[in-house]
Every structure is written in structure tokens, then in C-alpha cells.
Amino acid sequence: MGAAPRIAVCFHGFMRTGAAMWWVARRLKQAGWVDVVMPTFGYHLRPIEKNAETAAAAVRALVAKHPGASLDLVTHSYGGILARVAWAQHELPALNRGVLISPPNQGAVMAELARTMLPVHRAGWDPLGPMRPGVPAHWPLPPGEIGILTGGTGTARGMNPLLGDDNDGTVRVDEARHDGATDFLVMNVQHTMMILAPKVLDRVVGFLEVGRF
Image (cartoon, rainbow, N blue to C red; front, top):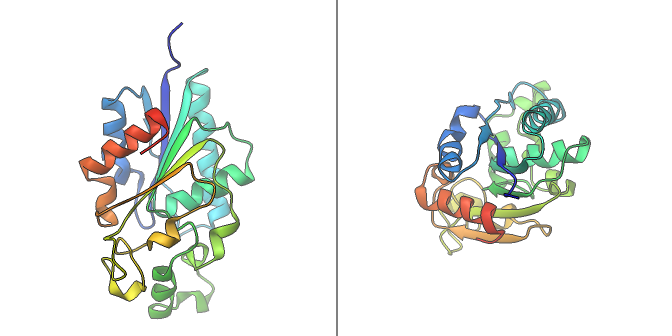
């Protein structure tokens, strides 16, 4: 009896659309995944809990379309927080494996800096609230083997000296960590480029295939 077919769902980052994950989906399909979906979420328009409902519906629809298939996950940036909320708040099937790319798992200093420079939260609109330092730390990782892949330089300066520690220009290395992860890897790649760089996508596929970077 052959191995179960592989399917995957990809969650994009803040101020992006599902199309931002196109290169990720393309690489997965080249590696043999039979179906990869890339839903779009209005992170800046709706609370994360509402976006988690949309995410859960996308997962259920994909699984229903492919009974018996093995489910994987790839996220970028804020999409990693969305995945944690979706699996925590909704009854969803366990993952085979997942890779969170540059997720602000512990919140992000960058989000706090942005809120300070553009204090729209004072008017009651706070799209960056879920990414403030410490805010998302309590959400568990989705069930399954989860690898975390983030960017950094191996120096305290990182790519953005304003963030105070090694970082990919947007998320600090220590902010990406989560105790529940199966594996963790830092690559010298900038935050946005993490979902475009072939060497990163190769690592994503490698983890999804064997559970290690």
C-alpha cells in the first residue's frame, strides 16, 4: 500500500494576500504535494479570532476534498500566529508536519515600534495588537511536528539594529522561538525574502519530508 497523498495549507503574513505564498506552493507541488491552498485573510480588517474561523474553514474544506491525505502547514510571519489560534480554538485535524517561517511567536518589538509611530490603536483599531511583545506567547503550536525557520545574521545587530538583538529585519530570533517546536533553524535571509529564497524553500520541503531541517 502506497504512502498517503500530501496536501498543505499556507497562511500568509501581515498586509499580504494568499498570493504571497505562491512560490511556497509551487515548490511543494514540485516536490509531490497534490494540493496546496493559499487563503487570503484580512488581518488589518478583522480580529484574529475571526480570521481563525476562516482559516479553520479552509483547512476543513481541504481535508474533506482529499480523504485520507496527510496534512501539512507552511506559514509566514503573522500567519504562524493565526495557525496557533486556529488550531487552539477549533477542532481541526492534527498536522503531519508544519513549518512556521519567521513567526513572531513571542510577539514582536517591531509591532510595538509601529504602534508607537502610527498609534491608530488609540482610535480603537489595533491590527498589530496580537503581535505585541508577549501577547501571542500563550497560544500552543498546532498538533504535529513543527519546525521553525527564521532569519538572522548571528550577531546582536541583526538586519535591523533598532530591534535590539539578532533579527531578520522584522522579527527577532528570540521572538521566533517556541518551546514546543521539533526543530529550529536560523538562516541569513531577510524577512520578506524567506518565502522566496530557493534555499529556504528547500529547507521547508526537507522538514516536511523528514521532520528535521
